[in-house]
Length: 355
Image 1 (cartoon, rainbow, N blue to C red):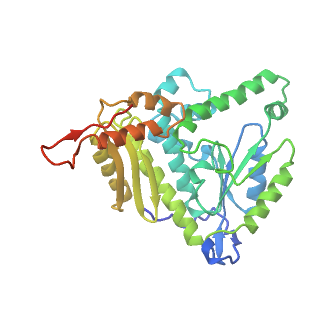
Image 2 (image 1 turned 60 degrees about the vertical axis):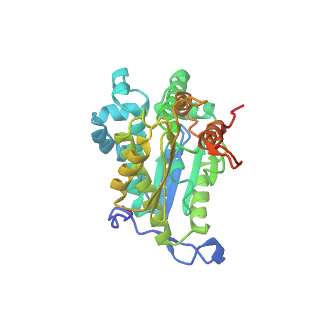
Image 3 (image 1 turned 30 degrees about the vertical axis):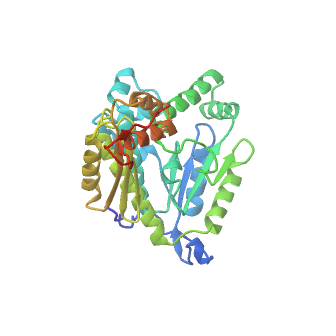
């Protein structure tokens, strides 16, 4: 599925003029919908920045609360349990019942579903990362030092309990580390993900809003169709990722499967000791994508090699999901392990040493 949702009556018809640039940049003069991804931190005044931008540009704000009910239905748990899980206050039983991987994939899919029309501001943890490589999306991070955030929280609650404020900040960081970061392929907070970062301890909310609004009006963007097509590709990626979370067990794909969609073509990347992963992943992706072309790059390797996938899975759960160079090197060694010799005489074989 690569189509987009029809225009929503709840979204104001706000567009920006992109101007004319060199043809190599791929932009033309046209009206382009605004999409802003705002990565937030509790107590950083990010909610005030989001509200100011929505009022200035006529955007619809998308937060986790907008999709929590659908996520709860798909996880087959109560809405309150999902909200407490996102806030970091869920009980031990609720955390046990909610699968972190499914929680992440379902949330990402539902948020991208709402963002298909454009003219939206996506606010939340790591909001920029699902769309970090989409041209036309303005990725912003709003942050501040911990002591400033503590003062903001105490002022909002009318409290003088600094320990309680610090606990809320630490709890949010723990939930983010457990529920979000391990499933993103980009883990750094640098310029590769965000176009601009604002420190609200030094800059006022009004300054942040003015700067982002000016950036939205002056930035070179691709045309309207290109933006919507890119959003549709990201939505399809999220749908396939959710289907993998539901139908492919971690034991079959301990390192996960990387999905990318571009120009109506689905690409699957991964490595596993099970030969069934390649077939299963392609079958699920083909069902979800509606018959789009699929390039399957999933590689199966023997389970008795020089490395253990269980160790890689441990790295995956702590947030480092990139396959190490050593794994790739050993995988190539397995593929070259038995190659017929070109020397005359009886057939000879050689084995690549792992030393």
